[in-house]
Length: 290
Image (cartoon, rainbow, N blue to C red; front, side, top):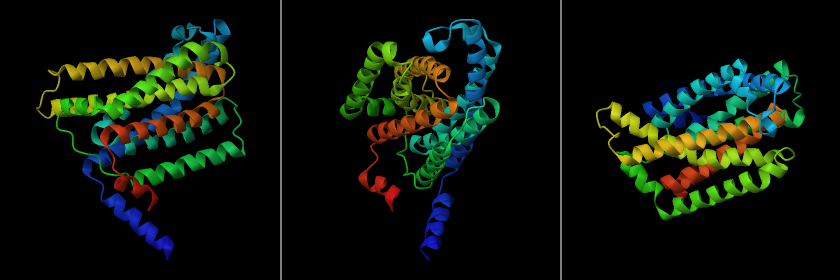
């Protein structure tokens, strides 16, 4: 009886999704397919470049001359474009957890193509990621309607989010300048921590930029606002930082380990940032636990 009630609530939740949310859902799923495969192609490119030059894990950039790495990068760009579009249609708290699918794809391909063994705890972790993500997606609270990029700017410059951004940037700088040179090759959490912290800010900026472009294409030009270009600068800066340290992590540690940890930290911080910036209420959060 209890199971039937849960299924009924899940169906009701799904059918209650708006058309925009469904578009965002489909775009996020396709993004995960591209991104999951890109991890493997980039890893193979990094290994090939490392055999001929200085490894990315120790500060080398020989992978920039490796076509296989660029193939993986292009695949990831396609995935990120789909992800970018998904944020324009659906709330970040719905889109981000769907990255769990990329974990499954990268873990399976790493096992087959890279001969990286996925042990029982790794399999269990992937399953838990998918279960958790499914729960979040089915019960994602509605997001407030945004009418202009200026409104997003107002949300991003409120004290609560500015405090969060300040803490994130301070922690990222400490990891980059204090811990990464000394412990990055030993502890996976250093590189992944940098990527996840910076990534939570990039998602909020991507969301803002996606809304700006969506409104511009609908006839309300948002490119005239300086805030749009500030968000664009933040997006580029954050993505460059993420890619740099993600390459270091992939070059140093197994893909089957990097992907789940990165996904978990990145998703958790993004949900926290979304709750702070878009003011998800206690009643909305209770949806996850009912």
